[in-house]
Image 1 (tube, helix red, strand yellow):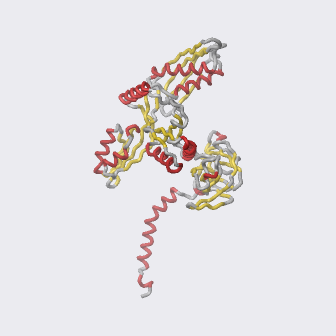
Image 2: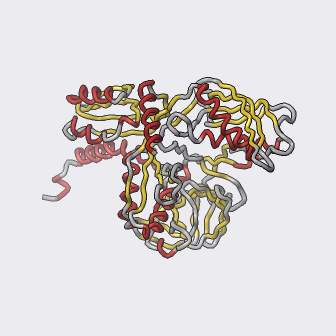
Image 3: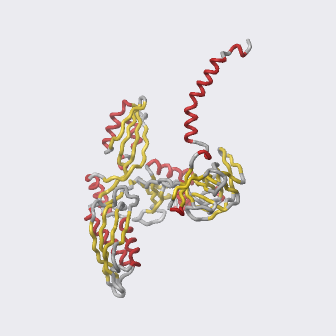
Length: 464
């Protein structure tokens, strides 16, 4: 029988149309999330015009504007001794980039040469001489961080800045062997470049470099992954401390200060008086610390005012409740006094530090804790158990929807109550539950929690 006579052409056509129509929503989704780079509107911020929004043409004609959006230590990374990053992936939004060109990192102001330009497909690299707007390429030998913008120097544009929230959890880590300190530092430097939400600092109380390194991130899992990467990729065994939630402190009412720092110990003494008040910033304020100099006249010489501001900032780095940074405060300087001989920058800085400590208690300080937006998904049969557990963790249920046979619960939960939650959720739901968690805000803790945290802090300080 001929092939043509064995097929009903009408039915065959209908089946093809049905298949295409079934795939069309998927294709529409792909086009929506991954459009042609030259057919979408991309915007940059003009740094010479107070970050005015500028639409990019998305064509090779025009100034070069490129974004470093991913860093990776590739197969040739160990040959670059001055840089932990062997190359960065670069998305070109406008203009042309060529091998041998000099480009400027707008974020750092550094001018660098493009030594090698490659196009990547899977794990294969193809050397190219130039790349145009809309393409993604990799550049070797360029020192930068994720989110840096590069231009040819004719414009001072940066791509829309990323919203990087403050870390909500910290972890003390240190290399087991002193000999691996170099690799340990190399790993931390690389991770900071790759991930703007990953921070590295030192324990302010110990001040011992390398022995009390504090890594901070967006959660328990986030930090666990980086500790594992240190071990796996850099062969460094690390000692890990207990995760610590990043609390904050703030004030709730205005409080006056009037402090005179006077010290005489033979020779030139120290003299500085500062007067003013501290108050909370309005809700939603874009800044966390403000300093205003409202002194009329020359009660305090203007050259000492920066030292006073520095003293208040330093004092705000450690609140008296539990030793965490104080934020959302405004310091207003209204008056003061100086001495022709004994006044100095150090004297006024110390006066500011003591003045802040003097008025802090009167400003009714409170402790702020990070609150997370948690979304849970579990079979409906476990809904009651899951919600009950969230309530025990002092979470606030803000949404409860049905998705097929699953219940989707949205809640705001204090991060301090979410330790080990993945294990608890698996136990409650026979391994069928899952959740996502992201930072929402810092909110005041309850009175009983504040009292508990303050007592724990005092006991720790007394033990030291």
